[in-house]
Length: 177
Ligand SMILES: [Zn+2]
Image (cartoon, rainbow, N blue to C red; front, side, top):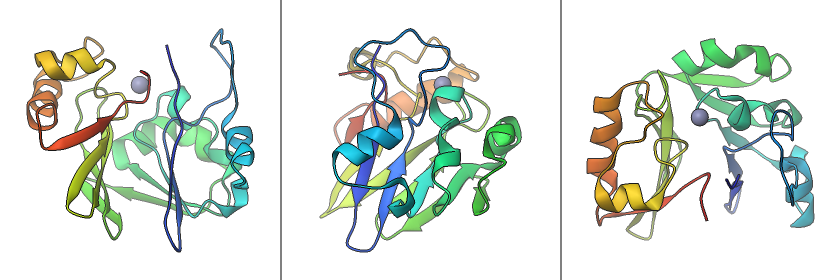
């Protein structure tokens, strides 16, 4: 399984998305932690302005504490589930259904993978992209319209696949490729 970090560098912002995790609980090879992966591309943790946590599973939240200068966005049910990881983050902004982070970047609750699990919609020059969090693990599932087996709510998981799996969106998966 792959764990991927996604960073968007905007003219005034550096927005980081799930996954943010350390080696804890996984047997990994070729592992690079979030902070080191950023350093490798010349970005310091303190330069991250915005951090979007898609859900409160540890591999998506546990390194949030290293981004103390960032505004941290998380759906409110996921905040309740994961706030133990966020004790050191001061600037936490919760949302219910969706939240516009900045021009062209919006966090949207899906609730398929976990109670308040979310994705990120990115619109750039008319093109639509999404960061799927764990709403989908495998690209094949998008093409074949198969909801994830790791679903808190299978109907919402299926609705996600039906809306985002075909055509209009470029989908970035957090655990594949
Ligand atoms: Zn998960």
